[in-house]
Image 1: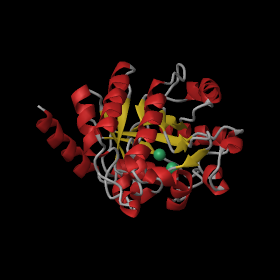
Image 2: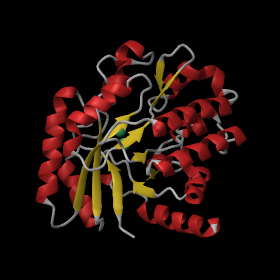
Image 3: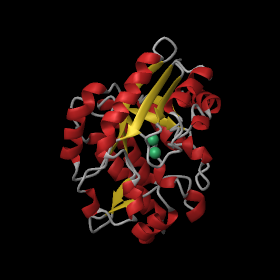
Length: 285
Ligand SMILES: [Zn+2]
Ligand SMILES: [Zn+2]
């Protein structure tokens, strides 16, 4: 089994620690990783602000600025070639799935995709009934402001989230489209703050199975992401064991990702995550 850290960020990430990307790559080498995938957040669509209802700081610090895209690709390419004999570096973007902005996202990937090897797809924003977007992982206040009615009963919020993830999995973003779905239980980032249920109910499970069937058909993998373990109110990995079991049953591959935004976060939780996956895989049979 290849040792891959498949989801990491760089010094250019506006909400990261701004630590040296080179030092992050060197940490991955020190920890014995075979591959290191750099997946910086793509810039947000320019007219997203008109559809966004949360705090300005959320969307302004979500992704690279448009001016940084070339700097990012140059930085990643430099490290890719410099460390080629020690670790295989893949370059890509963490792409935001935003309903209604598919064309902008497709055009972005057409423009920059040639310089990437693996892009990944995330849902950090959900639309309310009026069609306005709110962030689900920026703050407890923002999640509460956007979806107070659905936090009780929370299975409704889970459904809204999973339906959006299903739409993201079905979305065709072209020849350079993402090949992995990220942190599929991000809606539970604040589970211990809001007292959310650990289990997805039956309606949610049906959506999860549909997501897995779509991932299978479209040859998408899942981000097996350790970052949630270290979030104050999450304390679980993404996407959690219920979704992992569904993925294993459907034959959807899982790829470890630390989602590192700083040097110390690179490869975090690798042994525990890898061995837990092995145990689940055995149980499934
Ligand atoms: Zn990030
Ligand atoms: Zn990420």
